[in-house]
Length: 487
Image (tube, rainbow, N blue to C red; front, top):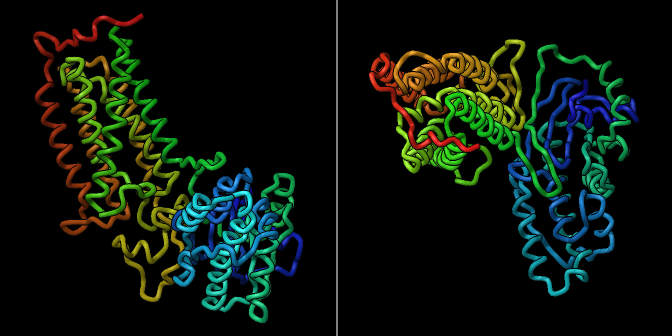
């Protein structure tokens, strides 16, 4: 099995056996913009990546603005050949800063130019030329800087955008006398499934470290729309949580529509609470990718659910009881979303299932992990990519077990709300323990984190509720407002 991005690295070597490490690679596609130092096959050091849109994604979005359809790279290159390069001078974001990329500002500049144009049809070729020149200038400038920093004399261009003849020509021109530029033919660079076996056969002869597991974010590109794995799994988590509540209401022969009210309250309150907690904790932008904190989501979601229950005049204890298993299930599935977006990972590990996240939030480099209070030996390369504990998967496994246990205990003989107390204890203990192997920058009182402090509060609250409602009520708590079940 060939890693998607490794395929781009191997592609030039399939057609030219002289292409071999060490080299610098620029991988540019609809989902990735990466600069890599490749000292040997199977060893990759991330030098820089995009902070927002990938270059190929920017090409697609600008092509849509110009009415060129999707995908847009080839269409823009054809049109740009007819355009006046002096007509539009678009900004070169971050061109003179380090090795990272940013293309969202450039895309916005093109949007403004399109809106300001009195004749878009007349200006379309010049707009395409100005945009393409800006993107290629940034890409090649960063590539030159990477060559100078590493001393490599071979450069590999890979990914769908590497099909651009203009990119290959500009790279060869600027790197003349310093580095050879190798680029595969378009049919290999374009991820054609028919060519993947050839790349796989070549890669199989190249040694890879047995413990290497490099994972990239899961995204779906549907035309101009990008769907992240986090967003997808959040939707699944809420839907499955709603299913669990609906099934319990059905078992009790009550109105199942209350499940929808709870889910809507949890979605709105949970997302707002999780985001606001993250912003308050880190000072980050409200609209940053990822960046949700479970405790903020828990409090916000609880507030939303309480409002939904109050509207229907449902006793609080009853709502807490029927939601307990659903909370464990939703959390387990939500953590899969964190894994897919590569947030909330753990500290470095040498275990066989340790994973490297080159595009994580943030990437698992020595420099980034140092900021998260992880120590490394003196002289360790700050840009080295490190394998870490996939703590998101650990949490998913544990909370699925908690869900299964709570689900079996729904018909317990204790008081109403007792099951929610058990959930609080289990959720608090799980999070308290997992924090010891999490990479975190909010540690207080030595090795303890803010999340662990919150976990202690949850456990204590859960123990209190378990003791309070251990015995069944003389008169069971009922939800008369839900008694009229809809057909």
